Image 1 (spheres, rainbow, N blue to C red):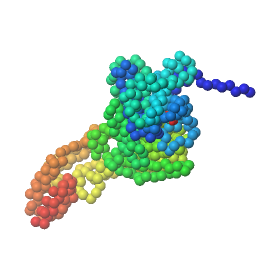
Image 2 (cartoon, rainbow, N blue to C red; image 1 turned 180 degrees about the horizontal axis):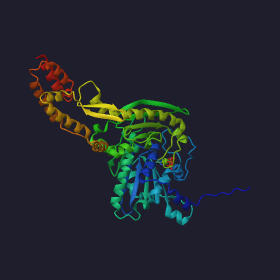
Image 3 (cartoon, rainbow, N blue to C red; image 1 turned 120 degrees about the vertical axis):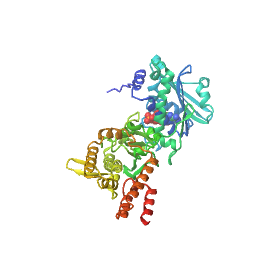
Length: 489
Ligand SMILES: Nc1ncnc2c1ncn2[C@@H]1O[C@H](COP(=O)(O)OP(=O)(O)OP(=O)(O)O)[C@@H](O)[C@H]1O
Ligand SMILES: [Mg+2]
């Protein structure tokens, strides 16, 4: 038997790997993964559709590379995915720099600097087509200094790496208003980076704080858990898988009516809240996959406040069926069974957070406006006939008037605008908003009227006590204090 060495045909393989399905934002995130692995604390993204050659560049102030390292880095498959990686390394396949870059552009230049040593290499697809070989271009000092982005960005740093994308065919081919298109796409990039690197941007303990700027504007972290505002549903849990820890923390976002407009918008509004519930899987603190229950639970209204953070180390990569773009990952069965337990508890707790607001009005000892009764086919809401105000009113009515009032009450009970309420609540409308101050003044006026009515009554004290436990009076401290004084007088 003879062995034939059958290397791939360069232009064809390179062209094919462009179709891996990277989006612009996932491609840029892949480049930043490399910067983080190289210990960078600053990443500067620049883009311009206006320059003679439109470009996107990603600069970091990390360790930089030696001549040998940059040669290796430009090779397809620079490091095997079977190699054991440093625990901080965000890479896995030895492909990202090339595949992510060339999915967006036809010309990738990497310039790296360590002190006075500067090296630059380039993959230019047009050149590869012409030569038909793996023709990696090595730029000389003069050529490097002629690159404007090197002059303005990397030159002044002690060490670092500049990744430059030119011939942006994916984005710009056929586009008319290139400036608008680029700005819009870069806005998605900003949002994506703010989320996937939020723990690096916030500088959480255990990670080197990272600053990312885009055309000079700093990217602020976007925390999907609203840390500090959310309820920690369950304290950290740790499973040990193959000797490595997987850490899980469960959060419940504040009830939607307690979110500020800004918070709600940051969480993607009504749609985002429902869509983004579920697991948030972090590999080395970098968000990989989010907004999924991995088919363990349905995305429903009740669990939309639940978000579960799962921290996995890169040592367990082989279990997660990680794809090259690092945008999908499937949890292995050992982890799934642990997560399933948490899902059950979360779903139950979420239900409580939603129904609590309804329950409180009707289920404690006070005298409430509405009473809820379970019947065979469901529940019925009735106006509480024992409410102190209603009783007082009835005392002033004759039989005929009482009957009319009763008819009116039944009509109101039977015609609650339930469908409309359901729609409003689902849209997170703040239903029945009234000015709190007006409501209090109105309640106080009612109390005064009642007091005047019962001043001669032998049941006066009993009625005052009842009022103190009755909606809406019991909700106002001032009114309760006033009634307490009335009692002793
Ligand atoms: N900004 C950088 N600074 C220093 N070294 C870098 C930088 N970018 C890439 N490298 C080097 O080049 C190598 C190849 O990078 P590449 O992104 O292609 O693969 P990877 O990060 O090893 O794996 P993956 O395909 O999962 O991203 C890296 O392992 C690293 O050694
Ligand atoms: Mg990489």
